[in-house]
Image (tube, rainbow, N blue to C red; front, side, top):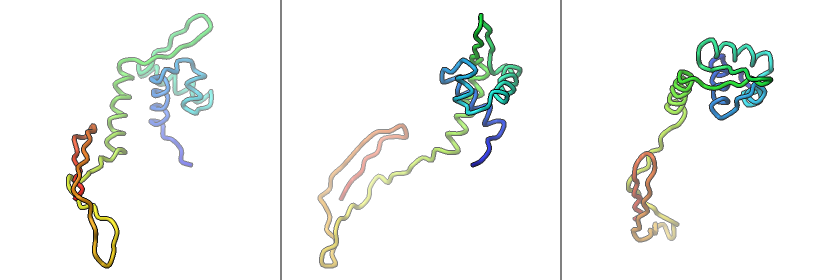
Length: 126
């Protein structure tokens, strides 16, 4: 089990608040932190103007600032570039089945097409 860096802890807290967790105990459970560590990290994020602390009657609520949303957006963009590998699909390939008497048998040509966020793909089975 690896330990999280300070930045990962801050990002986990920002993600919890962005997901709608506003009360400290909800943030604590979502970010998987102890109460003392959570309080220290929340104070830091408030001091950096990434979160806003609102005290009302008996409840404390945290919400994201525009700067906090921007930081979380940058992190998600970097995370997407580092960890989500784009898949490359060939546009045309041979689809061969079975081997009978040392010869390969193929189906007739058929096409399958679909669209994704990367682009439109057409597969030809020859």
